Amino acid sequence: MAVVGKPFPPGDYDVVVVGSGPGGLQTSYDLRRLGVRHAVLSADEAPAGMFQSFPVFERLITWTKQDAPFEQGTREYEWYDHNSLLADEPESRALVPQLMDRTYDVPSRQEMEAGLAAFAERTGLEIRYGCRWEATRRDDDGLVLQTSDGEYRCRAAVFAIGVTEPWKAPIPGVENARHYVDTGSPEDYRGGGVFIVGKRNSGFEVASGLLPWASELVLASPRPVDTARIGRLAVRTRYLNPLDEYSRGGAGALVVDAAIERIERRGDAFRITARGTTWPGELTFEADHVLAATGFRTPLLDLPDLGLATVSDGRVPALTPFFESVSVPGVYFAGNASQGAPGLRKQGLASNSTSVNGFRYNARVLARHLAETRFGVELARPALERDHVLPYLLGEIAHAPELWVQKGYLARVVSCNGAIRDEGILPLEHFVDAGGPDAVAVAVEMDREGTIYPAAYVRVGGRLEEHQLPPHPARLFESDAHRRELASLLGLIPALRA
Image 1: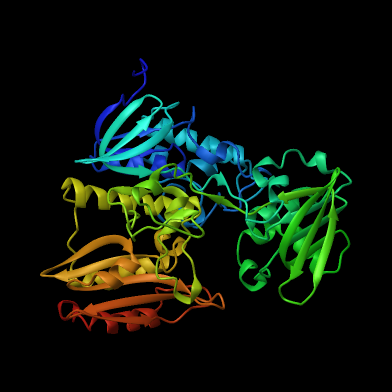
Image 2: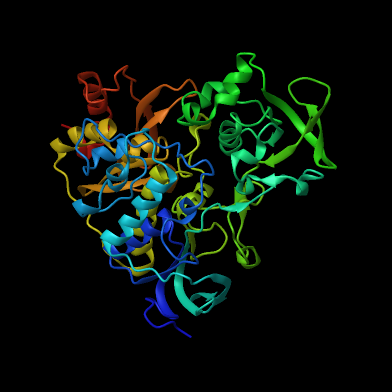
């Protein structure tokens, strides 16, 4: 039975969005902007999703630069503000920097939570809180979501449920270890030895937080830390003190490349047996505490029973470039579960879909795709004058936050099918694979050495050519050299020839 005063009572909707974290909020905002009738359901009692609890040590790794070369609230400023959601109304833009105290260039968890709550309030988003999704089934017209409040029928469902369910690697004895989510207070580890399973973000975050308290820290996983890559990430300055201690030969921190064979409980302590992966030999460690920083998975409930395919050891859904399940039509994912759409992964570069600054743009792409393909919404594709195409695309590779944040993943597309039209921001993988009329897509990419460069993809007569434009030490991609080279590439398309 519907609870009086709550929006979105059980019934029929075009779309049901599950979740009120940043992915759900952004998706709902954009669906409403496009006129798609939908309901938003959340098991929580307030917005913000995982940011109500995580990260454990309360400081994000994605930056927000409060003063930047562009004014807060402009599109260009989004490149400098990786934590706010996107809105058309000026009063709802760039909310997180307004709540930061400038102690750091990254927000605290509480500041991020407040920013998301402010977004929901200022944009007037309606959410049915305290309504838990419990089961799913198919019917003739789409999906039925069983919830704690009743049944919801919809033609498409968007699950913005995060990658939030604790996951432990299949190691004998790991059930005796605490998971990252159960770390608790750092004072609990005072004077003790701590063994951390995992050397990715959560592992280093916990290690950094415990470094002032634990007598000894050991981080172990089979693969070595990719210091060349990780040194370019925001995580470097936030979490990697233990790695620095180890690299300098400091006492009290070890970072070991080893496959963990078993974890044994011995009274109030642990013995960990491991085998080296970058060198031969067995290692044993004694520790007072073991923490499993082995990651999370998407809480999919019964969706696999409907045939939902997954990747990454079953931890995230396998998705199309438009974030639809590859195996269950009508089931979409927003938020950091959208990492299940891999993109081209050129040079091994993954998408930035695990973070708010990346998946906020994915949500816009998803909402637009849903509106057009399932609900017949005709979206504007502005016509461009031929002479305006070159400066427009140069401006995009120089300043477009979508391209700079989602390098090698999202692209600005201009088509030439009779009229010259701006097709908007689209997944680069879709542009490369889908074919179509003459068109050009521009993106910002990065090679294995960390060099950032613009790229252009030109399709003429069904044939696609990729062109890497030159990098620039100051990243001035509107230079005369870039103008000449891009003009030459646009000249390959008959409709754009001068």
